[in-house]
Image 1: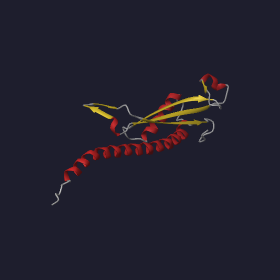
Image 2 (image 1 turned 180 degrees about the vertical axis):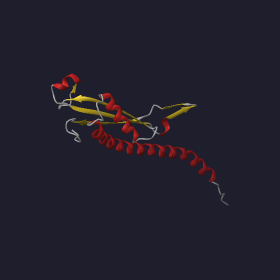
Image 3 (image 1 turned 90 degrees about the vertical axis):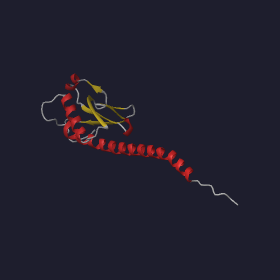
Image 4 (image 1 turned 120 degrees about the vertical axis):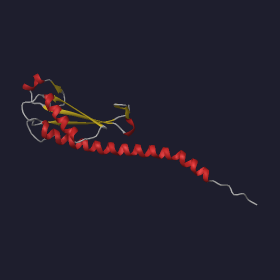
Length: 156
C-alpha cells in the first residue's frame, strides 16, 4: 500500500521565501516608473518655465534672482519630498563657450540654463526622531536649455 505524503508545509515555505523577493522587485519597478514619469515632466516643465520666466524676467533682477525664481517655479510643479531641484545659468557665445559678464557688451550672447532634478527612490528615506535625510541612492536628471534673450519664446 502506498503512503500519501502531505506537501502543504512545503508550499508555505516556498511562498515565504519568494514573497519578499517579489515585493522588493515590485517596489523597484514602481520607483523606476515614477522616476521615468517625473523626468519626462521635468523636461517639459523646465522648457516651459525657462521660455516664460528666464527670457523675460519680472523687472530689474540679477542673474541669481532670475535663477531662484525659475527654480521656485519648477519646484512648485513637484510637490513631493522625493525630488530636489537646482537651477544655474551662464552666458555662452554661439559656439557654446562660456563668457563672462564683461564680454557681453562686445559680442551677442545666449543664456544657458542647467536644471537638475535629483530623485530619491522609495527605500532611501531615512528618519530618526525629528531628523530625516535621504539615503545614498539617488537618480539624477539634467536638462540644459539655451535661450536667446533678444528673441523671446525661442529655444536655441
